[in-house]
Image 1 (tube, helix red, strand yellow):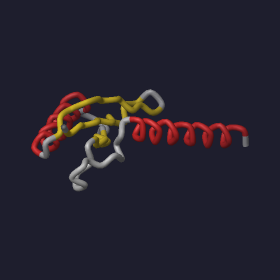
Image 2 (cartoon, rainbow, N blue to C red):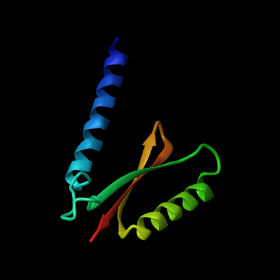
Image 3 (tube, helix red, strand yellow):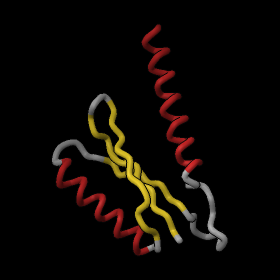
Image 4 (cartoon, helix red, strand yellow):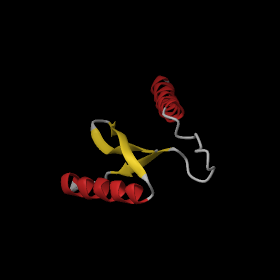
Amino acid sequence: MKSRLSIAALIFLVACLIGGSLVATGAFARSRSGDQPRTVTVFVDATFGMRKNHMARKLTKSHAEYAAKGYHFAQMVAYNENGDLEGFFVTYVRN
């Protein structure tokens, strides 16, 4: 029972931290044009296996896709679970 409670508390804490960081970075703010958000945070998933080369290609592709939409890279945070790399939260900003 105690371990279930601590796991639930940990999940709640992580959800609050992620949600709070998205709000703090303005990920939900809209630009004045109303169409595109000014700041976008995306999750780039790490697939099990070939992480070094695979993640570099995924991040490069993500950067190129958002650059084509007028965004530039702002911040990247690694997401680890139980010591394993799960992916990255990448934030892009539009001027």
